Image 1 (cartoon, rainbow, N blue to C red):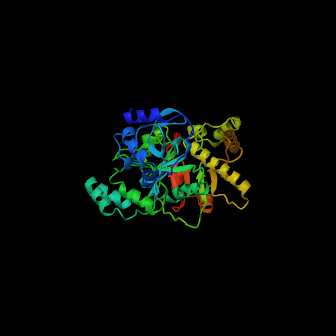
Image 2 (tube, rainbow, N blue to C red):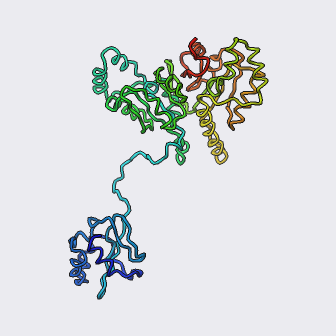
Image 3 (cartoon, helix red, strand yellow):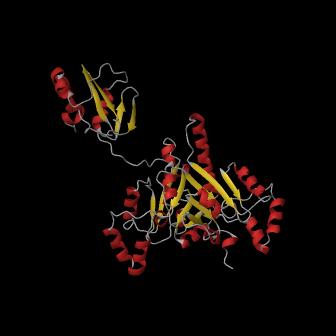
Length: 418
């Protein structure tokens, strides 16, 4: 402990302060004029500090004494006031609060990621990287890096997942106190080549601040580290590695996307088997390609919920946000819900009952459910116009109109190589 502070400790009585002077450097002339004895006594009390230091925030130390409590504490200190009477000096020290005259807009980073509804997205899904990727394939990494540097201020065109991600982030605007959602960028780029990606993110006004740049490696292994309910990428190998590791992921397929800026609703459509639920029922059908066997199995097990599939958590979290919307609507009758969830499945009655049983057991539901009995799903999708549609079978996805953002979930028996 500094000896000057020992001196203060000896002379400060553990009593309430009788008189305080204003806390400012401007007190110096006043004290010097009215209490000259104080000025004479200061070198003795604080031999290592000048008079100017004592009356400014430059006088700081790692420990201080509070006269009223009589206890030492580890902290930054500053002199708040000094009161001189015969034989005693009352010195009040304090820990000044953080102050910034012109605060800078710093992104809030304090929210624990485990309390967030998180989606991980690769730059290949968020933006159209066709031109850049072709340069990488044709000319190698060095030319690719130079291309990104020379075009750093040119935003990438929006990609297939962009309309979905933009509206997903918009949930935080509806719930500014809770800020329930977050998007994390999971990229194969290096931080250097990733600069253009973040410039593009800023250009489009997307609130994305967390990222993982892997410098050529797959980012899939960090999906659970970021608490992501799904990982969207145009890289099939990365997604397959994620699925093989039992992480939720999907391949964003090429399509022509029109993003209506006036449409604020977020519409998300899911297949059921192999996406929300596991592939148990699909495996029964695939065994003999028998629909009667499939239906009989589902009727026999209609009271038993399916086990969760790869995107079960994504579906549950979206449903949870809808409960927040329901609460908001109770207090504001004019509020218009922004999330609309649909299930579009090839099942029909009576196999539909197990779908209802499963969702009910999870405490969730869909706004719209379509049991099509093998009918072309494009007939529904063309009306619903979802901002993203998840299905586990590429053969189904390729048959739809090319203006629907589609994501393939390479999970289960439907995707096993024959």
